[in-house]
Length: 436
Image 1 (cartoon, rainbow, N blue to C red):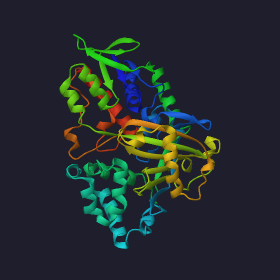
Image 2: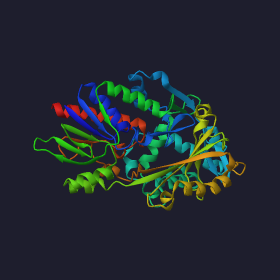
Image 3: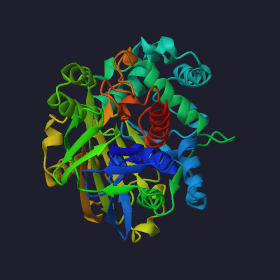
């Protein structure tokens, strides 16, 4: 069987790995110049760095299993994370239950209730009720209004913006809490994982395996249209020519697929796909001689700070891997129509500097060596209440055409682990239905 995979992110790579194990002829079409999707990298300090910050949680077993399966288990590194929260011009450590008890912006009873709400979420197993309630209403109910207004509301606004934060379903946040809770060891310390040499090394190792299994990878090759043949095979058109496949798996973004299927005459399906809304992302990366703090992941609850998180990569991965310099991400999610998203790289950098100096007055901007800006148009699907009613199926209305995207990672949040999981699952589905 000949199978086309549109998209060379981890979903496409994992699916191609599974399909090629069965000796099928698989071709990956990737419109960019490198594989990886949102985990794509660029060179800095002598090593490849992810354009958008990446790590794995201790619960990301689908990723760990695949790494071991391709014989690279020794490259998997586990490290303790340092998490903090920025509130009222102060950084508070937020890595353990004891840290929560020391969080003085909340009264003691609110701190205790906050901690109880986390424990309660870890024990909760019925997610159906959480699909119909907003994260806002659920958090106020279980954590209290004071905790919600002080911590959760600013974080939700930072993640989803003022236009969407009240629409986010409680099930999305609940699952985030579950995954982070399971990542903690017996001492309640969170363990995160990374790959020796960065995600680019993992991508290269995985790509090498699937190529040895016969997969053809075509970079800089965008699928511009498709058509169903009289034999119910699928013709994919690219600028390099046309190719015919028995099955096709699309792993890009649903708005982009909507354009393709609408042009092919599937107007209702296109309409359904357009119901899913996304936020874009802007990541400003600073290469610096000095660190901002000793925190790896700093959540920011200051509504006047234009970024929701400051992720200091070299407080997780050694700075010695990057010529001894520090690497700092400033990240924000926002509509692509937002003024910040529309700025040039230099405009974003100079816009951010005064805010950074306000948060870290002792940090000298002269320590910044270089800056980089990366943007993603489709970075976060908005998981609204009753989301399963609009979530597309892996099997599309088009014969032999399948779909696996971040919009179908539910109730979990999108990420490498679930991209791999869904890619492998849809591959198994395709094989089973082709043979049936």
